[in-house]
Picture 1 (cartoon, helix red, strand yellow):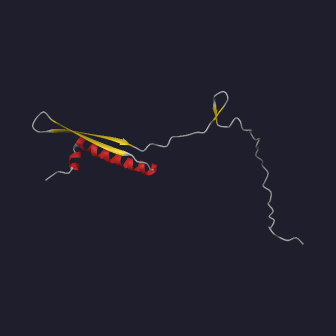
Picture 2 (cartoon, rainbow, N blue to C red):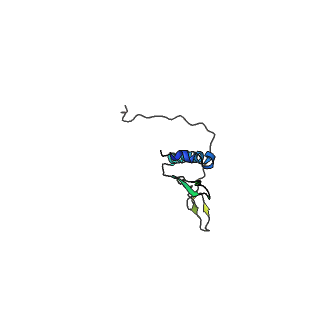
Picture 3 (tube, one colour):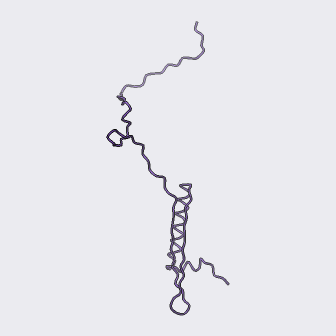
Length: 116
């Protein structure tokens, strides 16, 4: 009877490899769900013979490739001196001020009302 690979994976690193791979899979699924983009988890199992009696050495590695995060951006304007600034140097600045006055009451005029 053939043994399931999961039984073999449980022995690599005393079970740490398969536990870590499970954690990385969960991390990948969450990242893909958040970004809507694909990612991958690659498990590599290397098997090499020991020097005696039919024993085998197993090594497990994983490579997690999360979806790329969206780059952070800023829109800045170039000055004649070659600097970058947040406000367009070609655009006039408005002298805006705040006031402590209470808003005035609005009056509504009905449309299409005939005057007497």
